[in-house]
Length: 587
Image (cartoon, rainbow, N blue to C red; front, side, top):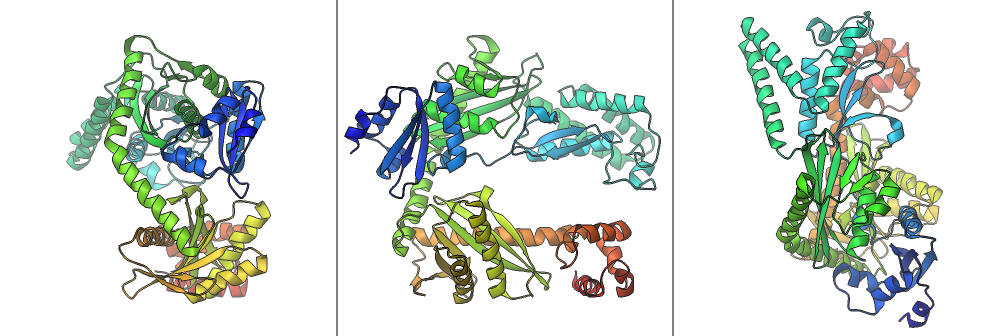
């Protein structure tokens, strides 16, 4: 197929790009030897994901680099630039929670998630915690044991936390620097793995409550002590050097690579992460990309233990940390344990993963054929939800290659009148695709709206105004609120779906996801009942007016007690009336 072009490819390091019939880049790779790597795709029988990717290749291009390191950097930059279809398989959307200690202006601990963690930010982060519940519980525990600042902002009067002994009165008292330093030392010592200090503090509190005959609180403290014991007992794998390190092992078989990471913080095992990835190129290239992708979003430890066949020298120069291949002792045992776990995970999960991929891919292919599309890589789905009977919210979810792409999800607050699905859809679609044109971002192959002709026509009108050509379909539900019909936006043909087909279950899953996402957003705003969330939905109230209202009232309950005249002291008459009516209907 590419015999003559392949003959001209040099035997040099570089990055290569596979392109489909439309000229779009579908895969970016790197190679020590471009000629040998590119030839390997076309001169041997391929299986799995590689076979599917090769079937879509219409052309290839390449860029020669000065070294393997330069080729790797080039590959990573091109992946970030083009977000190729088959490199997306390596995308790790999940950011793990950390416990963050903040010293200034007041000492606080909180659970934080960061999509990108940079060393220069100098944040005091402890983790990652694969178990978010454990991270939240530890933060709650620290707040109970130590008088940290718990309220937001700066208040004139001492709050309840001060009066019950859970705050030092940061807002309006002169603080003892010695007390603050002692508290910080103890908290950081605990987060660094020394649980004895916190256990001692809890035992003191438990004894104090018992002496005061407050047995209910003493029992709560006893439960916290038991929880700490459980957490510490789980950390049986331990290196006694207090070093933060990760351990990486993998196992490759039948076109899939299983990766196992262990997180050791201050010498103790705090958790791990496992993942199974289909291999498009070679196992070594896949594991390199996976590691770089993972550490672009997570804290890089002082040391990373790896297997002998991994490219430690290359990774070390890019990540600026120590990659070590242990040859004996407990460190080697940790790597062997990671390899063993990755092998077990692959053996246990492989058949389920293959079946799931087959169902997803065949359903996506079936939908593509059903609608007569040349390709179907990205689908944008929209749903509207009425909020509080006065305002609307909308959600957009994205499916790429049959799977949710949660980084691309979007929420919209809409300012049109209540129960006006037509204009709600027009506003949201306009905002979404005007921005797409402005930013020159990825264009979907299909738009699906949750609804019938009304929503389809609203979407089509906006696309025509913007001169954007994208197929639009509607998903209509029956009286039982179940997916029933697929309506083509070009011909208005109603496609009756077989409830037993893969494509029916695929569309139902997508419709359920966009509905879940939108309704969760709706409920989140409502359940918070926070003054800020409420004010965000009132036309005419921006950041400045919101600040004035929050300062005066502080809560929704107090603001609901205000008269129109009182609101008009801070707001224009029409805005005050809108807010008053909104609060009246607010439950």
